[in-house]
Image (cartoon, rainbow, N blue to C red; front, side):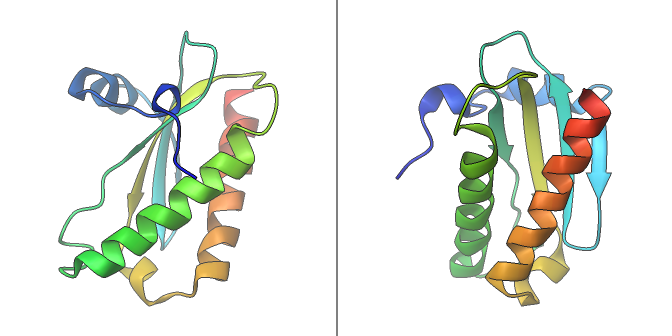
Length: 117
């Protein structure tokens, strides 16, 4: 299942909005930036560079895990505080199992929800 277009950051200006004065949650696996938006739903942007891992297979695995975690947390009901998110994986994320990555992301979503709300 794909993430609907309305739930994605699609332009450079949308990414730039998030990079200006974001709420940040970071750990050894991810850096998550967030900013409240004026739309009716939360949106996700991904920035996974080759520095994280030169192999596309690993970068794509990280993107799938991030999208699925975001979909489960933010698109399965009413969104009381819509926000834009940019997730930046770190090199350490490549070596960690999918389940642990999901747990890290859940902690980030909860932390950001508290800080935004």
